[in-house]
Amino acid sequence: MNGHELVSSPARQPKSAATDANHFVLTFENNRFASELFGQFDQNLKLLEERLNIQARARGNSVSISGDVTATNQARRALDYLYERLQKGGSVDTSDVEGAIRMAAAADDQLQLPTMERKARLSVAQISTRKKTIAARTPTQDAYMRALERSELVFGVGPAGTGKTYLAVAHAAQLLERGAVDRIILSRPAVEAGERLGFLPGDMKEKVDPYLRPLYDALYDMIPGDKVERAITAGVIEIAPLAFMRGRTLANAAVILDEAQNTTSMQMKMFLTRLGENARMIVTGDPSQVDLPRGVKSGLVEALHVLKGVEGISVVRFKDVDVVRHPLVGRIVQAYDAQYAVHEESEVTDR
Image (cartoon, rainbow, N blue to C red; front, side, top):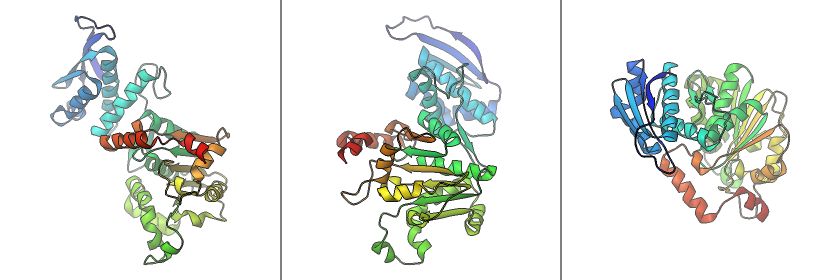
Protein backbone atom coordinates (compact mmCIF):
# COMPACT_ATOMS: atom_id res chain seq x y z
CA MET A 1 0.00 0.00 0.00
CA ASN A 2 1.33 3.40 -0.87
CA GLY A 3 -0.33 5.03 2.11
CA HIS A 4 1.03 3.28 5.19
CA GLU A 5 -1.70 2.46 7.67
CA LEU A 6 -0.87 3.48 11.22
CA VAL A 7 -4.18 2.67 12.90
CA SER A 8 -6.89 0.30 11.78
CA SER A 9 -9.46 -0.61 14.37
CA PRO A 10 -13.18 -0.32 14.85
CA ALA A 11 -14.16 2.81 16.73
CA ARG A 12 -15.77 2.07 20.07
CA GLN A 13 -19.13 3.57 19.24
CA PRO A 14 -22.60 2.06 19.23
CA LYS A 15 -23.24 0.05 16.07
CA SER A 16 -26.27 0.72 13.95
CA ALA A 17 -28.38 -2.14 12.63
CA ALA A 18 -26.94 -1.77 9.12
CA THR A 19 -23.35 -0.52 9.51
CA ASP A 20 -20.21 -0.74 11.62
CA ALA A 21 -17.91 2.19 12.40
CA ASN A 22 -14.27 2.24 11.39
CA HIS A 23 -11.30 4.54 11.91
CA PHE A 24 -7.74 4.51 10.59
CA VAL A 25 -4.90 6.84 9.61
CA LEU A 26 -3.05 6.73 6.29
CA THR A 27 0.41 8.27 6.00
CA PHE A 28 2.00 9.00 2.62
CA GLU A 29 5.79 9.11 2.32
CA ASN A 30 6.14 11.96 -0.18
CA ASN A 31 4.97 15.27 1.29
CA ARG A 32 4.50 16.95 -2.10
CA PHE A 33 2.43 14.08 -3.47
CA ALA A 34 0.39 13.99 -0.27
CA SER A 35 -0.37 17.70 -0.66
CA GLU A 36 -1.47 17.18 -4.28
CA LEU A 37 -3.50 14.16 -3.24
CA PHE A 38 -5.40 16.06 -0.56
CA GLY A 39 -5.95 19.01 -2.92
CA GLN A 40 -5.83 22.75 -2.38
CA PHE A 41 -7.46 23.52 0.96
CA ASP A 42 -8.07 19.74 1.22
CA GLN A 43 -10.73 19.95 -1.50
CA ASN A 44 -10.19 16.35 -2.60
CA LEU A 45 -10.71 15.08 0.94
CA LYS A 46 -13.85 17.18 1.23
CA LEU A 47 -15.12 15.53 -1.95
CA LEU A 48 -14.47 12.11 -0.39
CA GLU A 49 -16.43 13.19 2.66
CA GLU A 50 -19.35 14.40 0.60
CA ARG A 51 -19.57 11.41 -1.73
CA LEU A 52 -18.93 8.66 0.85
CA ASN A 53 -20.41 10.26 3.95
CA ILE A 54 -17.19 9.86 5.96
CA GLN A 55 -14.85 12.15 7.86
CA ALA A 56 -11.36 12.77 6.44
CA ARG A 57 -9.01 15.06 8.35
CA ALA A 58 -5.52 15.86 7.08
CA ARG A 59 -2.52 16.58 9.27
CA GLY A 60 0.77 16.98 7.43
CA ASN A 61 1.18 14.01 5.10
CA SER A 62 -1.36 11.90 7.01
CA VAL A 63 -5.12 11.67 6.82
CA SER A 64 -7.46 10.32 9.46
CA ILE A 65 -10.51 8.58 8.04
CA SER A 66 -13.57 7.52 10.00
CA GLY A 67 -17.08 6.38 9.21
CA ASP A 68 -18.92 3.35 7.91
CA VAL A 69 -16.62 0.36 7.30
CA THR A 70 -17.56 -0.03 3.64
CA ALA A 71 -17.24 3.68 2.90
CA THR A 72 -13.91 4.09 4.66
CA ASN A 73 -12.45 1.13 2.79
CA GLN A 74 -13.64 2.69 -0.46
CA ALA A 75 -11.87 5.91 0.55
CA ARG A 76 -8.71 3.96 1.30
CA ARG A 77 -8.72 2.30 -2.13
CA ALA A 78 -9.41 5.59 -3.87
CA LEU A 79 -6.61 7.46 -2.07
CA ASP A 80 -4.15 4.63 -2.58
CA TYR A 81 -4.90 4.52 -6.32
CA LEU A 82 -4.61 8.31 -6.72
CA TYR A 83 -1.33 8.43 -4.79
CA GLU A 84 0.12 5.73 -7.04
CA ARG A 85 -1.03 7.81 -10.02
CA LEU A 86 0.97 10.76 -8.70
CA GLN A 87 4.03 8.55 -8.16
CA LYS A 88 3.89 7.56 -11.82
CA GLY A 89 4.01 11.19 -12.94
CA GLY A 90 0.30 11.76 -13.34
CA SER A 91 -1.86 14.47 -11.87
CA VAL A 92 -4.97 14.45 -9.73
CA ASP A 93 -7.88 16.82 -10.17
CA THR A 94 -11.48 16.79 -8.99
CA SER A 95 -12.68 14.61 -11.89
CA ASP A 96 -9.95 12.05 -11.12
CA VAL A 97 -11.12 11.88 -7.52
CA GLU A 98 -14.72 11.44 -8.67
CA GLY A 99 -13.60 8.62 -10.94
CA ALA A 100 -11.60 6.88 -8.23
CA ILE A 101 -14.58 7.03 -5.87
CA ARG A 102 -16.86 5.52 -8.50
CA MET A 103 -14.44 2.70 -9.26
CA ALA A 104 -13.86 1.94 -5.56
CA ALA A 105 -17.60 1.92 -4.84
CA ALA A 106 -18.24 -0.38 -7.81
CA ALA A 107 -16.13 -3.09 -6.18
CA ASP A 108 -18.65 -3.34 -3.37
CA ASP A 109 -21.74 -3.01 -5.58
CA GLN A 110 -20.53 -5.92 -7.69
CA LEU A 111 -18.91 -8.72 -5.73
CA GLN A 112 -16.05 -9.11 -8.16
CA LEU A 113 -15.08 -6.80 -11.00
CA PRO A 114 -12.33 -7.43 -13.56
CA THR A 115 -11.06 -3.98 -12.52
CA MET A 116 -10.35 -5.07 -8.94
CA GLU A 117 -7.41 -7.14 -7.75
CA ARG A 118 -7.78 -9.61 -4.90
CA LYS A 119 -5.86 -7.33 -2.52
CA ALA A 120 -8.63 -4.72 -2.88
CA ARG A 121 -6.43 -2.31 -4.84
CA LEU A 122 -7.83 -0.54 -7.85
CA SER A 123 -6.51 -1.67 -11.21
CA VAL A 124 -8.08 0.73 -13.68
CA ALA A 125 -7.91 0.41 -17.47
CA GLN A 126 -5.83 3.14 -19.14
CA ILE A 127 -5.13 4.53 -22.59
CA SER A 128 -1.72 6.15 -23.06
CA THR A 129 -0.38 8.34 -25.84
CA ARG A 130 2.77 10.44 -25.81
CA LYS A 131 0.74 13.49 -24.89
CA LYS A 132 -1.73 12.10 -22.41
CA THR A 133 -2.75 9.13 -20.24
CA ILE A 134 -6.43 8.56 -19.61
CA ALA A 135 -7.76 6.33 -16.84
CA ALA A 136 -11.28 4.94 -16.69
CA ARG A 137 -13.54 6.95 -14.39
CA THR A 138 -16.51 4.58 -14.28
CA PRO A 139 -16.86 0.79 -14.43
CA THR A 140 -18.52 1.13 -17.83
CA GLN A 141 -15.61 3.19 -19.16
CA ASP A 142 -13.31 0.48 -17.84
CA ALA A 143 -15.29 -2.22 -19.65
CA TYR A 144 -15.32 -0.09 -22.82
CA MET A 145 -11.55 0.44 -22.79
CA ARG A 146 -10.96 -3.28 -22.29
CA ALA A 147 -13.41 -4.11 -25.11
CA LEU A 148 -11.49 -1.75 -27.42
CA GLU A 149 -8.34 -3.76 -26.72
CA ARG A 150 -9.82 -7.17 -27.45
CA SER A 151 -12.53 -6.74 -30.10
CA GLU A 152 -12.31 -5.81 -33.77
CA LEU A 153 -15.72 -4.12 -33.74
CA VAL A 154 -17.02 -2.24 -30.71
CA PHE A 155 -20.28 -0.37 -30.25
CA GLY A 156 -20.24 2.30 -27.53
CA VAL A 157 -23.77 3.60 -27.00
CA GLY A 158 -25.34 5.90 -24.44
CA PRO A 159 -25.92 9.51 -23.42
CA ALA A 160 -23.71 12.52 -24.03
CA GLY A 161 -20.84 13.16 -21.64
CA THR A 162 -19.90 9.54 -20.99
CA GLY A 163 -16.64 9.65 -22.97
CA LYS A 164 -17.64 7.30 -25.81
CA THR A 165 -16.08 9.31 -28.64
CA TYR A 166 -13.20 10.72 -26.62
CA LEU A 167 -12.00 7.28 -25.52
CA ALA A 168 -12.46 5.87 -29.02
CA VAL A 169 -10.24 8.58 -30.51
CA ALA A 170 -7.70 8.10 -27.70
CA HIS A 171 -7.57 4.36 -28.41
CA ALA A 172 -7.11 5.00 -32.13
CA ALA A 173 -4.24 7.39 -31.40
CA GLN A 174 -2.65 4.79 -29.14
CA LEU A 175 -2.88 2.11 -31.85
CA LEU A 176 -1.27 4.48 -34.36
CA GLU A 177 1.61 5.29 -32.01
CA ARG A 178 2.16 1.60 -31.29
CA GLY A 179 2.33 0.86 -35.01
CA ALA A 180 -0.62 -1.52 -34.67
CA VAL A 181 -2.40 0.37 -37.49
CA ASP A 182 -1.15 2.54 -40.33
CA ARG A 183 -3.85 5.19 -40.23
CA ILE A 184 -6.86 6.60 -38.43
CA ILE A 185 -10.16 7.24 -40.18
CA LEU A 186 -12.75 9.34 -38.36
CA SER A 187 -16.24 9.74 -39.76
CA ARG A 188 -19.63 11.19 -38.93
CA PRO A 189 -22.89 11.33 -40.85
CA ALA A 190 -23.76 14.86 -41.96
CA VAL A 191 -27.47 14.83 -41.19
CA GLU A 192 -28.09 17.93 -43.27
CA ALA A 193 -26.23 16.42 -46.25
CA GLY A 194 -27.53 16.92 -49.76
CA GLU A 195 -28.94 20.16 -51.08
CA ARG A 196 -28.54 22.10 -47.85
CA LEU A 197 -24.89 21.12 -47.53
CA GLY A 198 -24.30 22.30 -51.09
CA PHE A 199 -25.39 25.80 -50.22
CA LEU A 200 -22.77 26.18 -47.50
CA PRO A 201 -19.80 28.37 -48.47
CA GLY A 202 -16.32 26.98 -49.16
CA ASP A 203 -14.86 23.77 -50.52
CA MET A 204 -15.91 20.30 -49.40
CA LYS A 205 -13.57 20.31 -46.36
CA GLU A 206 -14.99 23.61 -45.18
CA LYS A 207 -18.53 22.37 -45.73
CA VAL A 208 -18.14 19.23 -43.59
CA ASP A 209 -15.72 20.50 -40.91
CA PRO A 210 -18.48 21.80 -38.61
CA TYR A 211 -19.93 18.27 -38.39
CA LEU A 212 -16.52 16.75 -37.61
CA ARG A 213 -15.20 19.35 -35.15
CA PRO A 214 -15.70 17.14 -32.02
CA LEU A 215 -13.43 14.54 -33.60
CA TYR A 216 -10.76 17.17 -34.27
CA ASP A 217 -10.99 18.35 -30.66
CA ALA A 218 -10.43 14.86 -29.25
CA LEU A 219 -7.57 14.22 -31.68
CA TYR A 220 -5.68 17.38 -30.70
CA ASP A 221 -6.04 16.35 -27.06
CA MET A 222 -4.18 13.09 -27.76
CA ILE A 223 -1.54 14.11 -30.32
CA PRO A 224 0.52 17.33 -30.57
CA GLY A 225 -1.11 19.79 -32.95
CA ASP A 226 1.76 19.96 -35.45
CA LYS A 227 1.81 16.17 -35.75
CA VAL A 228 -1.94 16.07 -36.31
CA GLU A 229 -1.65 18.57 -39.16
CA ARG A 230 1.20 16.65 -40.80
CA ALA A 231 -0.67 13.36 -40.40
CA ILE A 232 -3.80 14.83 -41.99
CA THR A 233 -1.77 16.23 -44.89
CA ALA A 234 -0.06 12.87 -45.41
CA GLY A 235 -3.34 10.98 -45.24
CA VAL A 236 -2.31 9.08 -42.09
CA ILE A 237 -5.29 10.68 -40.35
CA GLU A 238 -8.41 11.05 -42.45
CA ILE A 239 -11.51 12.88 -41.27
CA ALA A 240 -14.40 12.53 -43.68
CA PRO A 241 -18.20 12.38 -43.80
CA LEU A 242 -19.79 8.95 -43.95
CA ALA A 243 -20.67 9.30 -47.64
CA PHE A 244 -16.95 9.13 -48.48
CA MET A 245 -16.70 5.56 -47.13
CA ARG A 246 -18.74 3.97 -49.93
CA GLY A 247 -16.83 1.57 -52.19
CA ARG A 248 -13.74 1.40 -49.97
CA THR A 249 -12.09 -1.40 -48.01
CA LEU A 250 -10.56 -0.04 -44.82
CA ALA A 251 -7.55 -2.20 -43.93
CA ASN A 252 -4.74 -1.62 -41.40
CA ALA A 253 -6.74 1.21 -39.89
CA ALA A 254 -8.55 2.33 -36.76
CA VAL A 255 -11.96 3.45 -38.03
CA ILE A 256 -14.43 5.42 -35.91
CA LEU A 257 -18.02 6.26 -36.78
CA ASP A 258 -19.39 8.90 -34.42
CA GLU A 259 -23.04 10.02 -34.01
CA ALA A 260 -24.03 6.71 -35.54
CA GLN A 261 -27.65 7.08 -34.44
CA ASN A 262 -28.04 9.44 -37.42
CA THR A 263 -27.15 6.81 -40.00
CA THR A 264 -29.83 5.08 -42.04
CA SER A 265 -30.01 1.29 -42.16
CA MET A 266 -28.25 1.19 -45.55
CA GLN A 267 -25.54 3.61 -44.45
CA MET A 268 -24.77 1.53 -41.35
CA LYS A 269 -24.59 -1.71 -43.33
CA MET A 270 -22.35 0.00 -45.89
CA PHE A 271 -20.02 1.27 -43.18
CA LEU A 272 -19.74 -2.00 -41.24
CA THR A 273 -18.93 -3.95 -44.40
CA ARG A 274 -15.92 -1.69 -45.08
CA LEU A 275 -13.96 -3.57 -42.38
CA GLY A 276 -10.72 -4.91 -43.86
CA GLU A 277 -7.71 -6.92 -42.69
CA ASN A 278 -6.01 -5.76 -39.48
CA ALA A 279 -8.62 -3.05 -38.95
CA ARG A 280 -10.40 -1.96 -35.78
CA MET A 281 -13.82 -0.37 -36.02
CA ILE A 282 -15.55 1.64 -33.28
CA VAL A 283 -19.15 2.85 -33.58
CA THR A 284 -20.46 5.42 -31.10
CA GLY A 285 -23.84 7.06 -30.70
CA ASP A 286 -26.85 7.81 -28.55
CA PRO A 287 -30.07 6.07 -29.68
CA SER A 288 -32.09 8.61 -27.70
CA GLN A 289 -30.91 11.51 -29.89
CA VAL A 290 -31.85 10.51 -33.42
CA ASP A 291 -32.04 13.53 -35.76
CA LEU A 292 -33.22 11.63 -38.83
CA PRO A 293 -36.51 12.60 -40.52
CA ARG A 294 -39.62 11.12 -38.92
CA GLY A 295 -40.22 7.56 -40.10
CA VAL A 296 -36.57 6.88 -41.05
CA LYS A 297 -35.12 3.98 -39.06
CA SER A 298 -31.84 4.60 -37.22
CA GLY A 299 -29.08 2.37 -38.55
CA LEU A 300 -27.52 2.20 -35.08
CA VAL A 301 -30.72 1.02 -33.38
CA GLU A 302 -31.22 -1.62 -36.06
CA ALA A 303 -27.58 -2.79 -35.95
CA LEU A 304 -27.70 -3.29 -32.18
CA HIS A 305 -30.71 -5.54 -32.68
CA VAL A 306 -29.52 -7.43 -35.78
CA LEU A 307 -25.95 -8.03 -34.59
CA LYS A 308 -26.81 -9.06 -31.05
CA GLY A 309 -24.70 -12.09 -30.10
CA VAL A 310 -22.49 -12.04 -33.21
CA GLU A 311 -19.02 -13.35 -32.34
CA GLY A 312 -16.25 -10.75 -32.41
CA ILE A 313 -18.52 -7.79 -31.69
CA SER A 314 -18.63 -6.05 -28.31
CA VAL A 315 -21.45 -3.74 -27.26
CA VAL A 316 -20.91 -1.45 -24.26
CA ARG A 317 -23.93 0.49 -23.02
CA PHE A 318 -23.37 3.66 -21.03
CA LYS A 319 -26.02 5.04 -18.67
CA ASP A 320 -26.66 8.41 -17.06
CA VAL A 321 -24.56 7.34 -14.05
CA ASP A 322 -21.55 7.17 -16.40
CA VAL A 323 -21.69 10.87 -17.31
CA VAL A 324 -18.27 12.33 -16.46
CA ARG A 325 -18.92 15.95 -17.36
CA HIS A 326 -20.39 18.40 -14.87
CA PRO A 327 -22.57 16.45 -12.37
CA LEU A 328 -25.55 18.51 -13.53
CA VAL A 329 -25.29 16.87 -16.98
CA GLY A 330 -26.02 13.48 -15.42
CA ARG A 331 -29.08 14.86 -13.66
CA ILE A 332 -30.29 16.47 -16.90
CA VAL A 333 -29.99 13.12 -18.71
CA GLN A 334 -31.91 11.40 -15.91
CA ALA A 335 -34.68 14.00 -16.08
CA TYR A 336 -35.12 13.62 -19.84
CA ASP A 337 -35.04 9.84 -19.67
CA ALA A 338 -37.70 9.88 -16.95
CA GLN A 339 -39.87 12.25 -18.97
CA TYR A 340 -39.74 10.44 -22.29
CA ALA A 341 -38.91 6.90 -21.08
CA VAL A 342 -36.28 6.44 -23.76
CA HIS A 343 -34.95 2.88 -24.04
CA GLU A 344 -33.21 1.27 -27.01
CA GLU A 345 -35.23 -1.93 -26.65
CA SER A 346 -38.56 -0.18 -26.82
CA GLU A 347 -37.40 1.77 -29.88
CA VAL A 348 -36.66 -1.47 -31.70
CA THR A 349 -40.09 -2.84 -30.73
CA ASP A 350 -41.89 0.32 -31.82
CA ARG A 351 -40.26 0.23 -35.21
